[in-house]
Length: 160
Image (cartoon, rainbow, N blue to C red; front, side, top):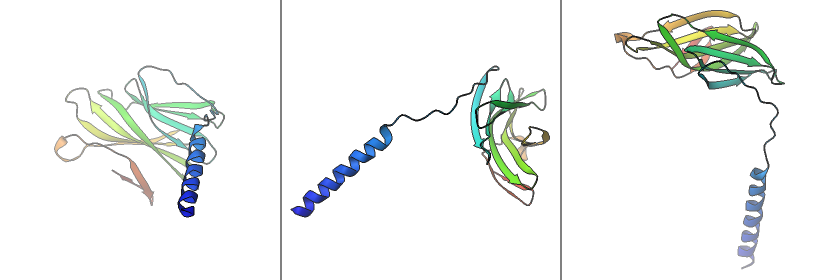
């Protein structure tokens, strides 16, 4: 009987503390807004210095906004490759090396006529300098759905 009462008491204490743990209001450190046209945030990364990179699509372009750790906008970069395509649903992956931070965006490029989807990968440095962009059209000319950048191995990207 004593064990059972002790068990119920411990369980009650655990549940009451668990409830208190999640009842506190979160602390909002900063908020920021990006307002262009038809903006959709899709992914976010934070580097070792606390800079925040938000990517999404905006007016048929890939869009990436860098904020410092105080929430101030550092720069905005938009990518629109071919005029006969629109670009959307980018994800971001951040890699650090001896040259600094490298940012990879992986999303979709879609033709206005035919609506064929392809992979589109765009590379930037941490200052927002455009380094390159590549598109991949898989075999058969059908739709290709990119998912994410898995890792960078010996300067090669593994994509799925």
